[in-house]
Image 1 (cartoon, rainbow, N blue to C red):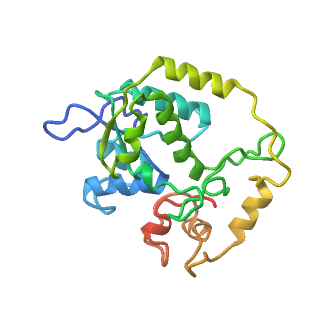
Image 2: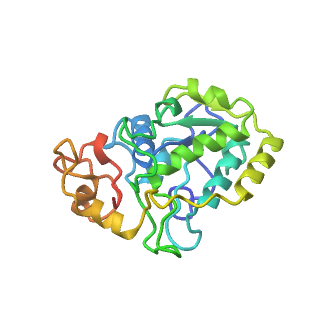
Image 3: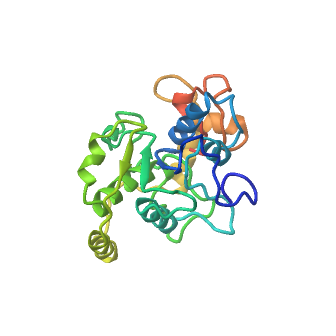
Length: 245
């Protein structure tokens, strides 16, 4: 499925375009990028995947249980994208809805790393601790590309929306494989953990630090994930693409 039920691996490319770039970023920035390509959120189809297919962008958007999302699927999609092997991709072109050099783990730009923010699966993992939430994924994706592309340093010179072609290295991928298979050191007792308790605390928060409604409040008001930017206070910068945290 590519944006529409039984849609098949085809994208509505504009005249003169021979490829469909893979698009990476945070959920809401991906949504905003695709909407911009179409002339605004009120143009083109609704829905996260449908909007990006109409914008001729290839994104990873897995919902449901037939092919469930997990971090291994994410890496698989990313490595295929880096080699131009996604369905109907047509080139090795990648585009970033957020410039990689804008990432700040402290959260100065609104997206902290490891803060248990974004969507998480409804099923609690064994041990009760989520390893990540969706707001962490883009950080991981940039790190992975920096590892498997010999020109990874160029990532940090890109502007949002600028094209990047990965010089993929099988040797660098094998090095990544060795790193990922090396057992991690135990987290210190004081390390932050993403648990249901953490999520509940975040979800009960009605306002953010700036006095506006929290994204969780917007999510509840919209009755589920999707474009909630038309709700009072839920502007596109806050959470155009609502999540459950």
